[in-house]
Length: 212
Image (tube, rainbow, N blue to C red):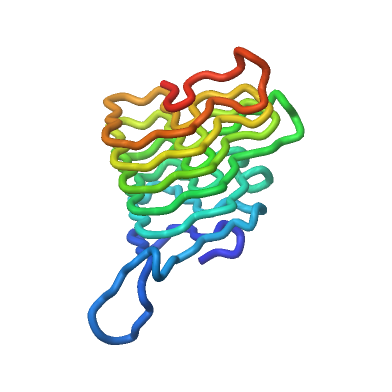
């Protein structure tokens, strides 16, 4: 754990949450009974991974992240993966914000999850991605999930609900966005009540569910 970024994956390629914490006996994992919470407290990003690593994040709650004033800002309020290979499984990603900058001409990407130039095929599966936003008051892309320059990425079996590309600005891809992605696979996801933008002028929203 890191006091600035919440969790920074460096030497541990597999991070699993929702343990019961018992020192002996059979391993018990139950995210509802034993939630493992990474809380950005609306002041910092939840998880940041880079440096070419391959890692798994499984069974965590990542909430209240805000990437407005952190290193590499305005990207990935909950989880930001830059030039690394992620496997994101069975996480609850909620109430995260990629950015609320002062300049309304700024662009923000991936409110809940942003995977940027991954070094291998990314897998995002079995997650609940809810009530995230890429931007407030400016351009936003990928409210729930954002992918950029990702080759052979798989986004499957996720619940993606109540996300917005932007609030008060132009928004693209409320549920998810994928820009410059080759061989992308999107299947068996539940996308509901997402919006490209809320409280924005007419014509300033594209792709309530998915923007490609």
